[in-house]
Length: 152
Image: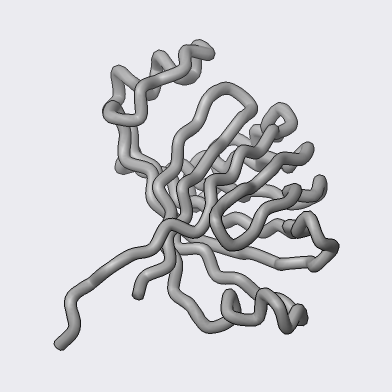
C-alpha cells in the first residue's frame, strides 16, 4: 500500500456576502453565505473566484458545522473550473462566541477541513478532473481562505 503524499495546488481567498441566517431548522442552524468574488494562485494555475457561488452551512447541535459549497473559478487564461465540496468546521464554544462577535480567530483555535472536487472541460486543466484534493481553511468575518492540496 502506498503512503499518503500531498502536493500544494493553490491558495484561495474569497469575500462573502453577509450570511442569510435561516435559523434553527429540523437539521440544525442553517446559514447561507454567497460569494462576492475572490482570487486563487498556485504553481500550476491562478485566476479569480467568480461571484454567485456559496456555502450552505449547517451548524449542528454537536457544535460542528457541515460545509456544502459550490462555486466557479476562472483561470487567468480564461478556462472555467467548477468546484464543489463538503467539509467540517469545528470551534470550541468559547471561540465560537468570539467569532460571532466579529473577532478574527487564529486557525490553531479551530478545525476547518474540506474535500474539493473539480470539474472542467479544459484540456489544459483536465488533470483536475482526475485528482482527490483536500483543503485547510481559515475564516474571518465575511471572508474565507483555503490552502488546497492534491493527494498523490
